[in-house]
Length: 294
Image (cartoon, rainbow, N blue to C red; front, top):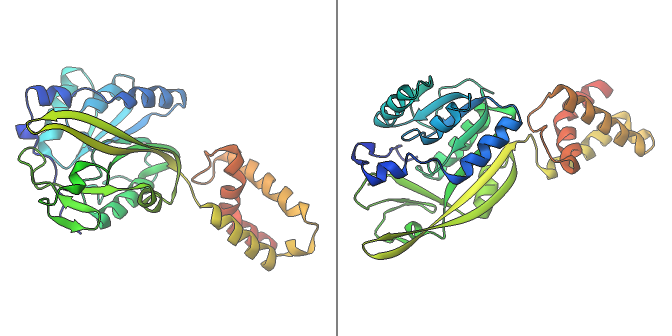
């Protein structure tokens, strides 16, 4: 696993600083969505200069600012204090988040978790899952393999999905992980993915017009995949008394347990589309059902 390295925020100033102080377009949607869901505990994972921390703080969220860069945290803190906002701050590595399990109900990590290699991404995905609550949501972006950076042969290849950025500037020698749809689904298999879309950003540089491709992934916690339902249901029916009762009775029990879990919010992944709920709920409840009926 490659050593983590953050941006050099000390050289980000002027127009570049102004750009990184403007909240992203989608953050306004997320703000209103999470307000409507009564979410309050917000993690700005890779907060940078604090653009999203300030936005959510002004709407009375409990904000936790996290970044590997001490410079970024200090500048976020100075900005927050000038706005009379009080946040919690942590300097550290995304590979080992300094938070307890189930600590946040909303997480935003934009243009940050890609700064690692493939093994690092697996660990970061696990860490996000660990600190996100059972009914929580997370919005993140990942560099796409369609973008120019992944095709830069003069950027050293770390693994099949990762290159070291060699352009002079704030991201010099910062690792960049690049994904495609299948890899995203594989990395975040524990989550219910609500939406994946690819965005193209155009910007001008000395060598002309550049295109930067990123995947935007919106997801929530989920306990099992569809396949788990079929495997576990077959095992349960074989190992319990249910194979001896009429076919519809086991399904009726599943619906009853689904409603029970929904009411008391007992397991991660309960905030799901109605059509999918019975599958995930059943997978979560299988050990309990088995112990009751054996």
